[in-house]
Length: 316
Image (cartoon, rainbow, N blue to C red; front, side, top):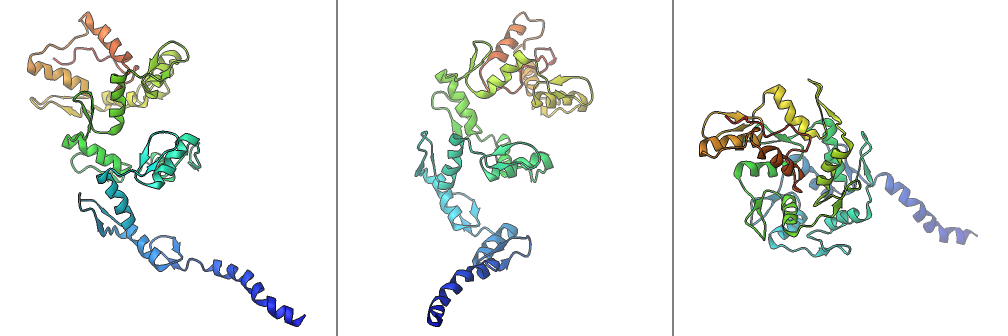
């Protein structure tokens, strides 16, 4: 019995040893935040998130990265290499992690929930970004105007409004776009594709947002109310435009004279007074019909159907 005990002793010790190892499996702690790591090298890599150190630079553009693997992934944006393909649709990705995130759009899986509201997200980064809508945090500021953004990517897109950069071109006509999404939407104007149908009437639309705007004509819902007056709106963007009538904000300035306008469409109409082209006034018989046709267009609207009537003669 004694021999058996001694023979099995190492096995018994081996079975209980991992418990002791687990207690001290992350002995390297960050002095800035509460994270701990099992290896010193991992802590050193983590510290770059605090110091901002990015030692790996792209040889094609001016971007730098904190990790070599991130640089390697970035280089695929220059080569166009996308080795990871979706088995459900025809999309391909440069990184395996992006394919894994994309697959959730097919399965509908949304494992990351907001702790404030009832929204859920397929990616952790999406819920982290969503939380900024509750905190109001906008750490990325434009160096040319007073706008700030919750995401670095949003700031990068905004900068194109200053530089005029439009890298996405239509393969059918000569139109160009700041983002890839609007290009996809525009392509439907060539293909005539309208996969989103109204359940109450016979109208169909090229994309989901148009259908959502259209549904308001049936429901009459106006959940966004002005805190200054009694007006309500079907869309938040329309409320934001309306608020300019109270604040006096006129962000669209004429490049010829010193006039400014609260809406881009008003500036565009005003510019015709310099070119000699006559804008439609509310007295024009064609004005109401034109407004109605604009509202019924199946394109990405800048102003939703419940916005203020824009055919008024405000350009004189």
